Image (cartoon, rainbow, N blue to C red; front, side, top):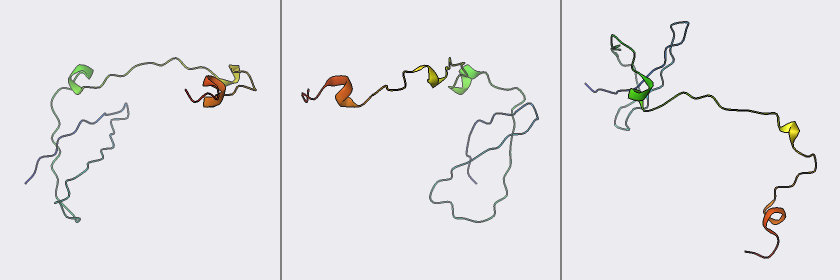
Length: 79
């Protein structure tokens, strides 16, 4: 028997999709699995990951003839 530990996010609909990657020595086939859920959800600090909000803006704000090639930014001198 093996233990594979992961973190799953349960959505408002009380569903979660869990993808597990098994070590190479686990051969393909059908396995019985036991899912154990802790009584209390972990905090973002405990999971090592944090949700955050990002500022976004439409790229239509850039000039239409903008060029971002290396030569346009640094020149052709080869640095």
